[in-house]
Image 1 (cartoon, rainbow, N blue to C red):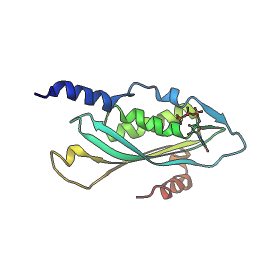
Image 2 (spheres, rainbow, N blue to C red):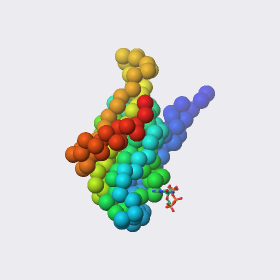
Image 3 (cartoon, rainbow, N blue to C red):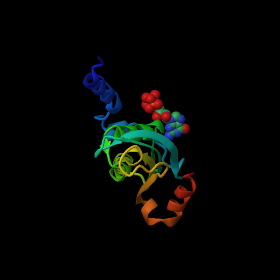
Length: 161
Ligand SMILES: Nc1nc2c(ncn2[C@@H]2O[C@H](COP(=O)(O)OP(=O)(O)OP(=O)(O)O)[C@@H](O)[C@H]2O)c(=O)[nH]1
C-alpha cells in the first residue's frame, strides 16, 4: 500500500523549498551604474507556481517586475528569485504582488517599482465555482510608477497578454 501521508509530505517539502529565504538578501548584490543607465529595467513574464493559503491549490502565473534605478541596478536573475521566494509561501495574489514591489523598493531604493501578476487559480477551476480559463491580474505601483502616468504607460505597454 502506498504511504500516502509520507508521499504528500515529501511533495509539499518540494513545493515549498526555499520559502524561508530573505528577499532583501537576494537583492543585496547591486552594481553602481550612476550616470550610465537611468531608464526603466523590466524583467517580463517570470513564471511562478504558488499555492493559495485557503485551499492549498496551485496558483500558476507570470510576473512582470520593473524599476527605474537611482544609481544602483541589480543582477537581473535576482528579480526572478524574489518572485520565486514569495511564490514558495502560501499566498493570496494581492499580497504577493505588493510584497515583491516592497522588497525591490526597500533593497534598491529606486525611483519607482512596478509589479504585475497574472495567474490562474486552481481553487476556482478544479474545485469550487469550477471556471476554467480566467486569469487574475494584480498590480502594485510605487514611486514614479504611481505618480507619473508616462512611466506607468511605458511599463504597461511592455506587459504583453
Ligand atoms: N542587470 C543585469 N544583470 C545581468 C546582466 N547580465 C547578467 N546579469 C546578472 O548578473 C548577476 C550576476 O550575479 P552573480 O551573483 O555573480 O551570479 P549568480 O550568483 O550566478 O546569480 P544567479 O544567476 O542568480 O545564480 C546575475 O543576477 C545575472 O542574472 C545584465 O545585462 N544586466
